[in-house]
Image (cartoon, rainbow, N blue to C red):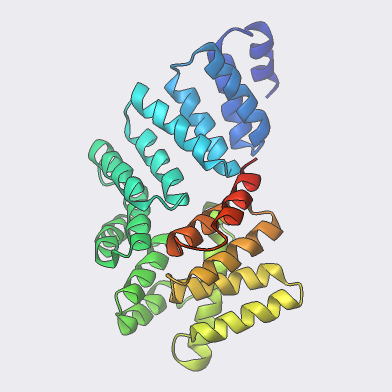
Length: 296
């Protein structure tokens, strides 16, 4: 870090120096400082696609989804590569703009080939739109390239459930997760909530011989919340949404739990999911206000 800071000190008008230190700050998790450095890089070179894309990633991690999407949009216009469309797709998917997200992932795949990450995220967006069969097509290709990808396995089971293939879903769950898994692996940091919910479901399958009833998961979530165990409540609501992905109340309750635990990006994602599932919700203005506050 010292050498990067020295470069900035010696070359305060060089965008590369600010961008390089910004990348280092981003990788170390210092998002606010990274954004400040990328701001300076963009100020010096407004058409620096890499600086805009990097700032977009930092903003995405902060939960500032609209600002992130705007940076990715500009980066894609300056240098229309696969990464810019993929990253913009991530932001749009988090904002529950699933058709636009799918279009971005389509572009990323057309430019960058059938990258398993691109296929996985397109599958998630398709599944959230209710297109389980399209999601399964992408997930099977992604799993052929990376057979031990927990996220792909998770969403394949979810897609099978959505398609009404309960027996196939239970078989896939045992195949992918029956021997256990390591949710604490660094690559699954952003996916830990979903894996926690899946662990609840797997325990129920082992005890009861089948998938749990959504109403029982909701009751367990409410009981945990009443006891102040908000993390546990969030895991149960995640499990509920895995079984019943179109339940708007579960999406709202999960978002509220995540807001309480400080997981801003996830909270925003599930508030947007709630509004997608309940477009005429009476509390729409209040939820949008919550999203705005979380995005600050």
